Image (cartoon, rainbow, N blue to C red):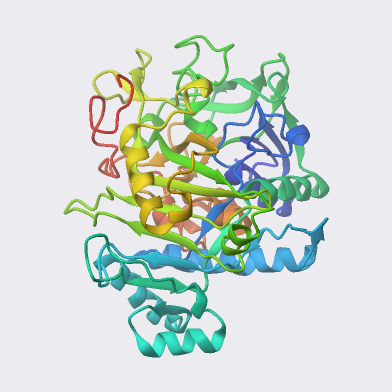
Amino acid sequence: MTDPKSVAVIGAGIFGLSLAIALRDRNYEVAVFDRSQYDENGYDPTADDVQAASADHNKIFRASYGKEIHYQRLALESRRAWASEDEKRGSTEQDDGRDVRLFVNSGMLRIQPFDHLAALEKETLANMERDGLRDTQFVKSDPADCERADKLGWKDKILNFRIPDSESTYEAVLDSLAGFVRCSNACAHYQKVAVDKGVKFHLGPQEGAVDHLVKVKSNLEPSKDKVIGLKTKDGVVHDADAVVVAGKSSREIFLSPSPFTHDFEAGSFSTQILPELSYHLESSAGSLGTFKIDKSNTQLWDKYSPERFPVMTWKSTPRDTSGKDTGSIYVLPRTPEGLVKIGYRGIKWTNFQPAPQDTPFTQDGQWSVPLPAEECSLLPEPALYAIKQFVSIFLPEFENTPFFSTKLCWYTDSLDNSFVIDHVPTYAEKSVFVCTGGSGHGAKFLPVLGKHAADIFEHGDKSSSPMRSFWRWRPDAPRRNGLEEGPGGPRDISHK
């Protein structure tokens, strides 16, 4: 088979946009399909038809990955790309006084669980030193680091917090490379970039929603099907040399009866499209809460601005012997609208429901699917407790303030926290490719992820991407990252 010349990409979020642009840069004819009307709603996270995790006010940018130096290096490559894109747009671009940079270098304060550095932090600092970046990290208890931070203008973001019922303060490390990306703005921007490059978009519940893949028997591999296109809900068949299933849609839309699309009946075609991914992925939810600062409250408005306040992360409970995070929580500086977002990912919630009969992999006949949108505004009690504990220590001004909003944000978790970016071996002639498994940390890579994925798409095992070995199709990998728990476990909220 010659290299595919036309590619249909299913999913217009982080993964789909990034790959679509990269494939177009390699002269492929690219069409992107998504059931959300992103061309009209601009990826606004408050829009009625927006449920994807890619559509969010802001997401953390970090290069701190413990022992995973390959992700550290990918993040730094992406950081350079974000900075370059902002420079092209005008790095200090303002719109009616609202800062609209895509990447904001606010810094990130990694607060430790206790008054000394945790093991994961030591691993991160060692890898930063290995790459010649230790001078970008400022340990609160290190006088030399604090002196350097003062000279470079970062000292005011090395914040001090007392440990409850103790005379000690939490150890912390300020990362001057980190900050956040304005995720919805970034998606809207790159969608326009894709259009300008010639990528075609089919968006909306009829034109953009995919009904099924179109398959024929392969002449070259007679035991397998070859995909030659897809059919959308409006009945139109779109021919393609290859189909890419990108991002969240790879499981939530196709592999399960989606509670977000009410025209789908339970089990209606659930086993027809990429059922192999049922082993690799799981739907899980992080817990988000926001407070709203009125601009007239100049004290809080200034204090929590990106210029004065860093992203903060805290692990209230250290990782246990299996590596699980039971207390990871974070807060970002306020948005231009005054929203202060707090996220709890210590427990990634699941919602186990009966799986279709022919699903290749289930756990006791079940798999996790997102809750209906109308049920995603209530947070489980352990999440509320963790967020309130965090607020009482680190955001005392909001301790008795009601949330402006709460939300369960559904992600696609992979079995080892690495993405799944590869051709699906059960389909012939490399006609199906997946680019998915965001695991809550995909957004920061938007400017560069597609370049690596496109190289894997074209060259497979001969790809020059250093991420190839980490992102490959891996059916023999053990299910970890919480995916081994299954229904009835401590994260399953289906019966709570």
